[in-house]
Image (cartoon, rainbow, N blue to C red):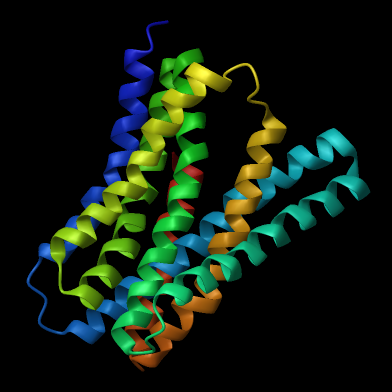
Length: 252
């Protein structure tokens, strides 16, 4: 099959993060409520994707390859490496930004979200491209599903970046950087590593990503959300995020 269509599907799915990023251009009057809603929505999406999709699917691959006991232990170890990597990334960011102001905390949340989702989008690009290359119909369905949850991922990056720096453009650009990992991952994988992609190697990457996203949500996004003390918007964001992921998972 010609690689143009699979690459196009991966590109559209990846760049959908920009659609979420563009939300910063809306005229928002109640800023704290908006930030609370977006961040709670984002952490809900990250945790839900990890629990409903990434962890079960990846753990199944480990169990299939290594058996129940050994597979489970290895899956937990890979997940914990992802958890620990958040602290490493966080310490790296703090090293170059020692300020403890609220805006810089929000900026750190945006940067960590971008890094986590960039890592998440890379294997998604591999999966979308390879699925489309083997079966175009399957690839289109997977691309739509990925596009559905890439939009809120763009929100989780652009909103904290914008409100910590005052730059709408920077918020959108950072969401674009996260999304561009998808087509780049697809193309590089096809050109360089197509013979080395296995279900197990993808499971390793996705478990790492799950550890990163859950830790980021609990350690960084949640404290930032609670700081604004807007309980109604917290609950609303959590509910909408969960519903979106569940609908995406079971329908698409």
